[in-house]
Length: 259
Image: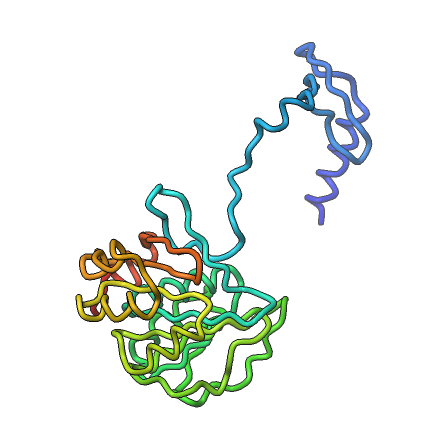
């Protein structure tokens, strides 16, 4: 307490004193500190406003970069139900889980292989339990809200059962399929967004017919590199490269399609 009092007395003495001996004039406003330097205001004519551009994209999780090197964003926190189907690898699903948690979402993982998710659940959130693991069919109600959005990741194998917790307001559901399976047509038809990673030529042909993909996209699917995903909606398609951060590489390893 003595030190604090001494500092306050010194501050009062400094405020009451004259300008420094160096000749630099110092103006003091009581309780507001020193007056900063003055500069001319930045003024634009109305006709010049169109030349301004702010590098701000959509709100959501940055899942990688597109073919032009621009950030690709996946908006998983929505006031309406949002279903995502990812035909791909565990690595990509786990990167999405980490990045969704970093935006403040709670991530709930429904899985029959909790051992491959346990390290991520412990590392995410800096000690806070923002990623929780549940056995298949044992996910409790999540109580999602605008202030506490939820991403449910269903890692339930080739034939995932119908989930007890469905997509709803502020609660998105991502279903991971390691390969094309008999459940894929139903999941793809119900999904708002579908992600496809490297698949076999036969699977590419089936997906092309199911999703009405152009021939060029179908031909490219069997040759996609690790970390590359074709994200599709009813109207749009975009190839995205997911590039891990150093922290993600340390936790999950390099990008890979096969688990």
